[in-house]
Figure 1 (cartoon, rainbow, N blue to C red):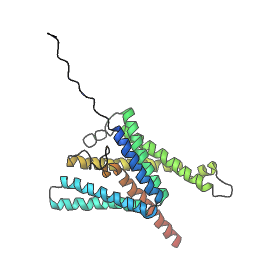
Figure 2 (cartoon, rainbow, N blue to C red; figure 1 turned 90 degrees about the vertical axis):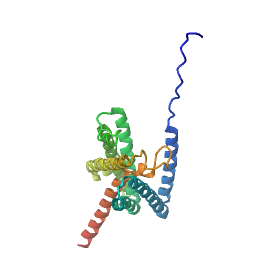
Figure 3 (cartoon, rainbow, N blue to C red; figure 1 turned 30 degrees about the horizontal axis):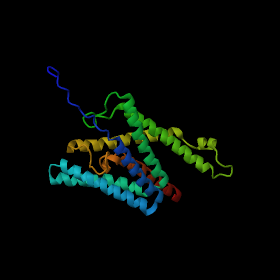
Figure 4 (tube, one colour; figure 1 turned 45 degrees about the vertical axis):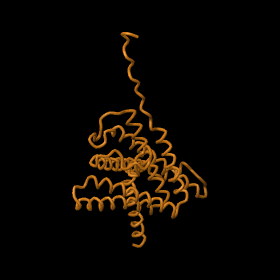
Length: 252
């Protein structure tokens, strides 16, 4: 019709990647759960394989950052120590500690995500990770503290079931230090967030969004375990140190 304005072009709404992310998460959880259920060499091999994949992605990032071969070698050695230490800690730690560590990191991520989305507020380091807020950090710490308290309480309850009097929640509460567990959980949540920031800093310097495109909707292996690495190092080293101290005290 004469004089009519041309129709505005139709802009397609951006497609959500949520279905892909959920599908990938289900597959990842299934594989990890199977390895954990099998235990033994299957679990150790799975952790070693993931560790090698993370290291390969780290080296690829370092290659984009290092200005010369000497610094590249230094970066590779640093990454090998960091990732190798974490992988070795996960391999040698007992399953009960492994589950505690994995659960704590998952709770930290979930608590940080939902608190950050719901509350928002000031960013921690927008030049490194624009989405990370102080509210998210607090939410992650709270969720990790709650996980640590519930996990140690459940473990104490299971142990109380082995006594002649049978399971007792009151006995479990009496023998556990829930306050210490909460502090440890919150502290490890900070470590997990630091690991996340470290990988984000590497990606910023390398000029990439993800460590790789291995996992649809999630990026690379390094993207998925960045927070797990420092927590594994701290928890595994503390467990090994406590065992060594026990052996030393027993031999004194």
